[in-house]
Length: 339
Image (cartoon, rainbow, N blue to C red; front, side, top):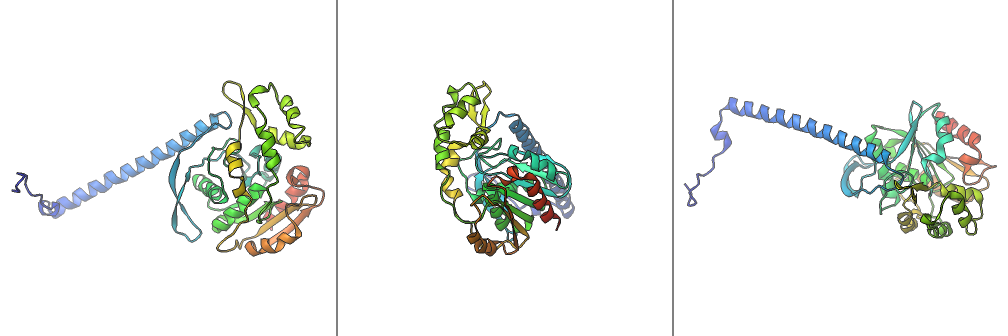
């Protein structure tokens, strides 16, 4: 007895026979296996329930809490990621080898309906809303590293070991970043009118114009369009931007996208990409002949990061080449993916 009056503990091995220890160990392992299965089933149900709740939300009012996520990096080891979990909104079309489509700044998966359906004749298409856009969750953090991790999380959630990846403008840069961070995940990569270089802040006027709108004061989108006309003279651009306006549960107008967070993180979306090693898989860079987003001087830097890159130009198109020349765009994409 110790001075406290309690018996000194004895080792379990001294109290049990070999058979008892074996039986006890087997029972413990069985309970552990059952608990693990139940935990996995609970997690699947929880994620499914959260995704269902998200799908029923009105556009834009989703808040997520930060948590630790573990993911494989391009060296095959696990790394910890401190970031919000992103259950990205998506639509799917067709069957076959999977291809993900990533839209541009101020865009959404809805901008890609026509191309998604046509590519769905040959592939299983997943058109995604990027974080802070469309119906995807909002976050105060937005840069190419976390957005590439969003794609990796999407692949894990949907059990997609490898994909083709197509991105336009900002989505093109996210696609390039993902290919550089997770090269084994990408079979073929396509960047539509976007290079990996740094860009000048050409959207400041758009941010200012959108911030100037008091959405609660408008009765319809025509009033919003007229209010924007003095700052954004192009009707097609205004129409594109106003697709980001939705309604709350009480019927009031509100932004679907997280405009404050996108503007706050805008400088991080202009930087040049860099990588420890290049993406050595097949890559296609399609530019619009009337656009200056990919210039002849970008070729060397593109080949430095994507040494197997091919280059195509749609002479009749500007920056929104998939909308301005969908037939030629789909022809180039399908031809590259079938090569």
